[in-house]
Image (cartoon, rainbow, N blue to C red):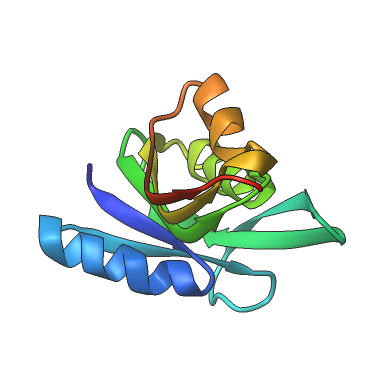
Amino acid sequence: MQAVAGIESRGFVIATALALKFGKGVVMIRKAGKLPGKTLKKSYDIEYGSAIMELQQSSISKGESILIADDLIASGGTAVAAAQLVEELGGKVAGFAFIIELSDLHGADRLRKMGYKVQSLVTYHGE
């Protein structure tokens, strides 16, 4: 793994902590219009509509292994879009790290079915 990518914005804190632990760099995946320089954009569906995320084109080199971190995995739309951004820049997704997994929304299952490794500290099951 060469870097940890944090998804805006709580993911930045988690990515920074992981990057410090492993001595790696941090990459930010942000909402559209927040990053300087040339960016790659990805539109994706969320529970109440759609959104656009961006990743700086110069932040990932071809073949780099990137861990993607965020606070929560719900339906998985944001995480899938983040993985697509990393891969479109030539990076390889090393896996995903989440604090909370909402298992009834199957986002983590979706990522696993796509072949990604997923680690969550806490898993909440529906009632």
